[in-house]
Image 1 (tube, rainbow, N blue to C red):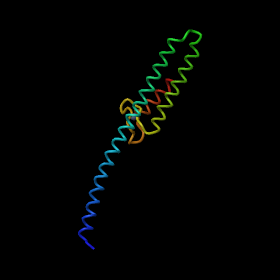
Image 2: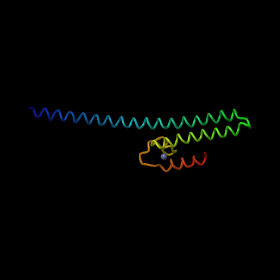
Image 3: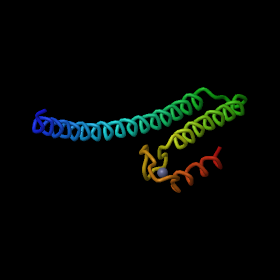
Length: 122
Ligand SMILES: [Zn+2]
């Protein structure tokens, strides 16, 4: 048995594992970036949808329809609120301070304040 050859092989595998470990770290960072970007896009998309719907309804509404429209808007805002609450539950910031980033340290007071404020509005 060539002991030197075995040692060389172990050293080689160790080096390869180090490289793989570095690569894995890079991939993990990239995944976090993509998840955060995705969350920001979801939030922006939802915000734009709400603006568009408000716009369409204010153009279309006449006085007797107004009550219905208001109820519809409340329903939609409630849905928007649920989407935000769900994103928060999934572990993302929905506050303006850390907008769309992954929550790595438990609850965020800014997010909770934002959710509480939104509950009062709807
Ligand atoms: Zn937050």
